[in-house]
Structures are given as structure tokens and as C-alpha cells.
Image (cartoon, rainbow, N blue to C red; front, side, top):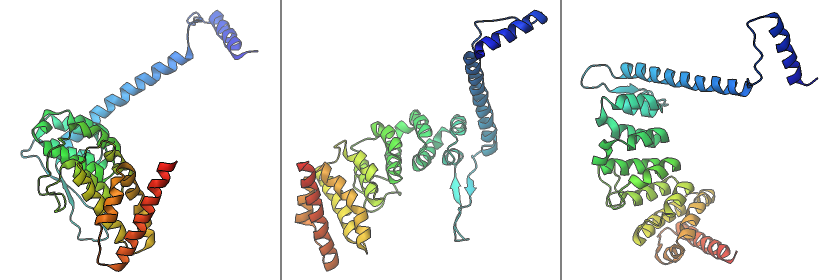
Length: 290
């Protein structure tokens, strides 16, 4: 006997014996389950908000100025310095979106700290929320720096969301800049960060926008070439080939720049450079022929 028919007979049986039971043919089990799931989502959301408020009171008491929170770093060196966070930075470090939202109301000046940490850790939801605040519009350098941080850690989804907010003509500024980053636009600094991390995904994403000037492309490519040919072993050189190929496939003129301009007094590096150049040219022509 079909299951639905058996259930109907059971309901009819109990309907006859108990006055409180009513046969309802329109009752759908799927609707009941869906309603329970929706209520569960509401309960979880309410619980998250209550938890966020409790954590906000814990990390941000009524004292002024707001406290700095310290976390001991896990390091082989027992004398390692602890990490010091502002409250919003602390919440961003652990990806606590609701806590960040609760803290923003009291200390909007900490938005930049939270954006840096969320970009470093790759928490897209927090980055989206912080970028919507007016506080960041007053400091475009903070957005540029956060974009470079996201690139350094290859968080492409965060990079994609931040890209429209980055001032493309703004030069790097601040104590965080390295010597190589000074004088670069934030977009170019992000490309250099991808080169430093040997991140093909981040570099490919950046190059697709055709946003770098020719001299910026040449400089970044020559840095990548120098890093590749100065490796101690052939295996390490091979690890850098995909990054160099990404450059050349996007801008074929870079292959000729490499063959023309790259010079190294070290004979081993010079031989490696010649081998890498030959490989890139062969790979480029092979892809064109296909």
C-alpha cells in the first residue's frame, strides 16, 4: 500500500476516536520543514546579535580611551612580542562581523584598523561593511594600502570588491611603504606584492584590467625576472616560471624587454636568465600558434 494512503488511513482512524484530531489533506510536510528552518535562521541570527553585543561590552568597556588588546603570538621564540589590536581590529582579526558592526557605532575612527586586518585575513563580509562607511572616504590611502595587503595574501575576492574604491592615480604614502613601494601607485604596488609572493592568481587578476603604464609593467617584470634568476636551484627557478609566463602572455613586448635589458654580472644568473628567456619566447610562440 502506498505510504500516503497508509498515512491517510491512520489519520482517519484517529479522527474517528479523538475529537481533537482533524484530517487536513492540504497539510504539506515540506511547508512545515521550511517554516522550521526559517524560524531556526531567525533564532540563530538573534543569538548572533546577542553574542555580538556581549562581546562588544567585553572588548570595549565604558572606559575612555578604548583599550588595546594583546594576543600572544605562537612562535618558537618565547620572547616574541604580542600582537596589539584596537577593539575593531581585534574583531576583524577573528572575522567577527557582528562584533565589528556593533563596535563601529562607538568608535568609527577605528575603521581603518579594521579594514587593514580584514583585508589581510580575507574576510570579504567585513571589508564590504567597512567600505560602506563614510569615514574611509576621507582617507583614500587607507583603501589603497588595504588593497595591497589583500594582494599580498592573494585574497582575489577581496581585491575584486575593493578595486572600484581604489584611487588609481594615488601614490603610496606612509611608514608602511618599503623603499621599493615609494613612488609607485597603489595599483603598481599591488603588482609588486603579487610578484614578491609569486602569486600567479593575484597577478593575472591585476593584469587583466590593463591599468599599469608601460614603464610600471617593465619595472615589475624585471623585478620578477631578477627574483627568478637569482634562485639557488633550478627547482626554485621553475617555481617562478608561471608568474613570468603570466606577464609575457598578457604583454608580449616584455619578452623583448627581458632579452634586451636584463644584465647580471653573475655568470650563473646570466645563464639562468638566458634559459628563462628562451623558455618564455618558445612558450609565447607556441601559444600564438595554437
